[in-house]
Image (cartoon, rainbow, N blue to C red; front, side, top):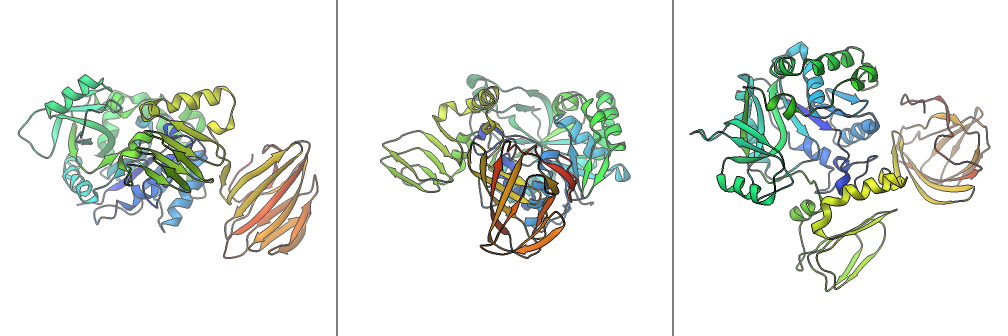
Amino acid sequence: MKKITPVILSGGSGTRLWPLSRKSRPKQFLALASEHTMFQETLLRLDAPNISPQPIVICSDDHRFMVAEQLRELGATAESIILEPTGRNTAPALTVAALANTDDSEKVLLILPSDHVIADKAAFHHALSIAQPLAEAGQIVTFGIVPTHAETGYGYIEAEKTSLQDSYPISRFVEKPNTETAQAYVDAGNFFWNSGMFMFKASTLLDEMSKFRPDIVDACKQALKNSVKDMDFTRLDSAAFNQCPSESIDYAIMEKTRHAVVVPLNAGWSDLGSWKSLWDIAEKDDNNNMIKGDVLQKDSSNCYIHAEHRLVTTLGLKNTIIIETADAIMVAHPDHVQDVKALVDQLKKDGRSESENHREIYRPWGKYDSIDTGERYQVKRITVNPGAKLSVQMHHHRAEHWIVVSGTAKVTIDDVEQLLSENQSTYVPIGSVHSLENPGKVPVEMIEVQSGSYLGEDDIVRFEDLYGRTT
């Protein structure tokens, strides 16, 4: 039996978990349900002899360095990291994954979103063992979650009623129902939540896509043919991929193919699609509160309180969700958490950066936090990872003061090199060509004070960059 190749889909934005999850660092890259991020948990649950330890990862170009860093933290490597220039839903993503394996079209691919929680790993692996021979026989297997209640936030899969126990032919896919219909589905016993997880041979998927959506196959072939290797990444051709129709795999083939089967999965699954779903799986105190961070509560119950940077206190609060971050606080009733996306949409409409970006911004070399800003000045706390280097650059409108707090930084200003250690500083005049790198084994922590008439991130002229960035 051949090894299964995991394909990790990591392109979502997770806006329903705002303000923690944002476009610049969505929920799959956050540690929400354990000490590891959800992306890392997806990888860690794949430790089995019949599963390849090197997954294919499909993600957006904006998140490529987060993917690489989180793989590195686990000591893992990817077979490939494929970068989508724009999101085009699951049908193109799965088609690209299958096309990337045309050298072995009999390879079995396991498609996994990177933002799921699965509590019972043994049950998950048992479901995979049922699915693998079906996939090898030419079936497209989807995993249907055994419903625990009448959920209106998920689509459903209706299975044909047969004498089989481990897998079932699919009768139909159903959109998100109302409460009464959802309860009828649960009572019927042959409906499952649509998990978005699949297993199939690359050749099977391509045969069915070519039959029902040849336009998607053609666009993906062109995007892959014209792709460019960039370090450890494969950049799909933007012009070709942007022409690809945006379509889910359910609409593209699963509702039409005669080769679809569903394998039931009862493994403590959640897609953490809202703050309520995160509250449901969290450990609670004696007052049924989930508390994380610096929180003092008095006479409060049934609350989800997450404090990241400041002390949060509550008095006599009930049935409330409070999320505190460096630049935003959200207070919500659990019955309204499905409306968080509308809140984010309003922030976008108002031109608020908090809709997409955290105050702490991750870069391939490390991260920075804008800790203070005012007229003609800005203060950042910068962390540079060991062996990393910022681009060789200059600014037309700002000067910079650098103060090293810990570690050793190698600084080059107009071809003059110097090493700065703890409590040492330097000055970068406007128009000077400069770079900063960490030659040591521990992170460099430093404070940067910018001053000038314009302090935007687009006032950067890059001359050289290890990470292939031009802007």
